[in-house]
Image 1 (cartoon, rainbow, N blue to C red):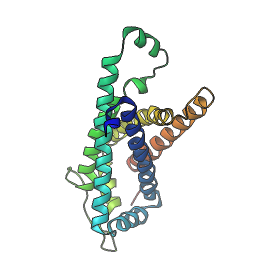
Image 2: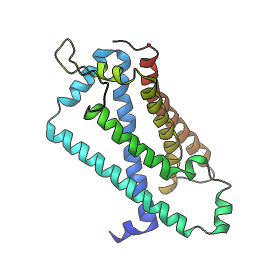
Image 3: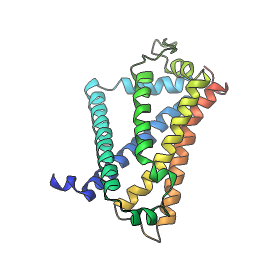
Image 4: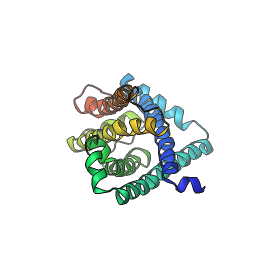
Length: 222
């Protein structure tokens, strides 16, 4: 446990928890993409998830919550540690390779946490105003109608799109940091890792933002 309180220990925890969340994000995107099949696609996907035993659903949610909180706590600790240890000379050298994404990881992370809370209130707890809560022809909850109603306003689509830009920035640097922490980052692999991080971040961004935009512009209809 003492190792986890060291700088390298915190970085490894950040890499592991971050990697888990990237995998979850990709799986989540894959599931959400069923909406492009139409109402039957997303509704069937949602019904399949809700048909799982409640203890399994709760366990998965608790594990994901624990991973998220650990990632946030260790991220804050590392940020404080790095800033307190930074000297003027080091800051000048580091700024040459720093990017907007790398310099603002703590802020994009906190913004994503705020968005996740909003996202849960909207689509899990369903307490945000303006949602259409009905059942489909089979008598199951109509997830498509709920999602469509949530993205019927420009403000809602704008918030979601902005959050996906933040997610893109966080993943863009986070994926590169993951490879660096596990020791796969060197002069030869750096260009490849940068491309992989950029590609994954871009795919996630385009995949998620396509949903609200397609609904708002009438491409996806119930």
